[in-house]
Length: 253
Image 1 (cartoon, rainbow, N blue to C red):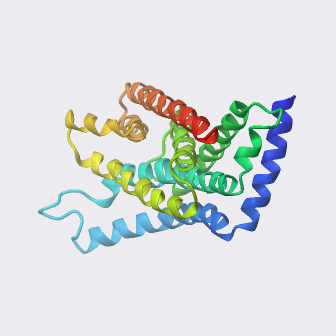
Image 2 (tube, rainbow, N blue to C red):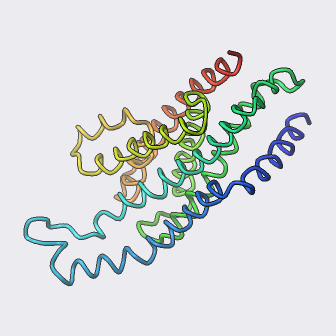
Image 3 (cartoon, one colour):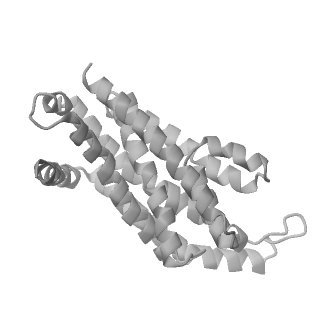
């Protein structure tokens, strides 16, 4: 019962805060803009490049369509979840600057419940966002049930991003600096696509990469896609637990 009240109270407060911040609203709209743009731009660009002999060509014998899985994984699975995590990360920084987090420590609500809410809500919204983006892009599609499992794994990236901001940034200025780091880290998904196995598995040191790898394996028809997904979920869950512990320690300082 207390948890339900906490979710309603904080959820209402989050909606109000996001509604007042044009930057956060813009980030939500940006995810939809990416999906719409890719839905129409990818087929047109693929035909254009093929018609003029740009891709494929004698030096690069692949078409743009051949890398659709890489682009969908990067923009929908990773960036979609990352943007949601950034939104809630900035909300947490607002609460940090306003000393709301400090105030939570003296309320009857256990801080762990508050922290779990802050980790859980971004994951739920990222799941919906990433799934919607993949379906809207409408390229490199999987059957619905493996797609939902993979976007569920990708959604943990949002929780990690939100907690990362709250733990390692003191204000929004530092948050913007960390946002650049998150974007650069995502390049490992693009880079990993071109790295041959078994060297490709070294990219797995970046936990979200395993989710993209699972997506690619499922599209290829590999029966082991679920193993990569499990590894990605376990690694991300471990990182999220560590960040939750750091977040709690930071709140008491």
